[in-house]
Image (cartoon, rainbow, N blue to C red):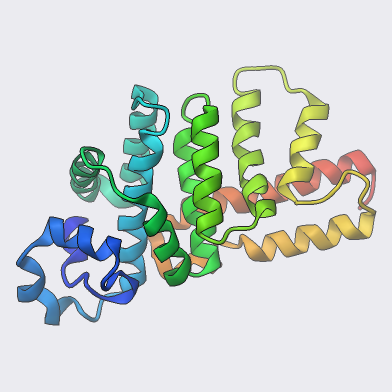
Length: 249
């Protein structure tokens, strides 16, 4: 069916009447009416998520006034890994069109806040961080990501937890690991203070493992399982590092 084809009949779900629905209309035109009945049964939460993702990726790519080669390569690699070659090519064409326009990302984030569940919003933010971290995350990008997270209803604790994962990737890429810095980021990932007790650390790990379990975003489709697993693994690795440092089983 292809990436673009998945939006036929896309005037469904939370896209009705909002800015995302208007953008769907730009891409689909009259194709919606001729295919509406056939596609109505599709899981629209997946389609809503995909288009929201492309719009916000475009906004983040332009945040510092330039679209870098490394960010584009990361975006292409992500799309190919999650959607396959054919759908990735269609998604890239849609992204190119979106990059040429200026959309009101704030209205889109507010619509996402109302229409997607919390786990899906966390997944969306994680993907945006992943693409931003293809090169150094500039302060303008970080401010934009924080604004997006706030508008989508994501807590500051969860924002900082996801930020810590990609700060960790950037800080240690090609460098000798700094154990103290690594531990600091591990505590941020688990959203706990360094002075937390052993029991508090265990409870935090269980809470985060449940929150970020890949099954939480199963409604988005198999395409997003890999990136969901990335956060889940980061939570487990952070817990193991803290356990080792604290010396408890």
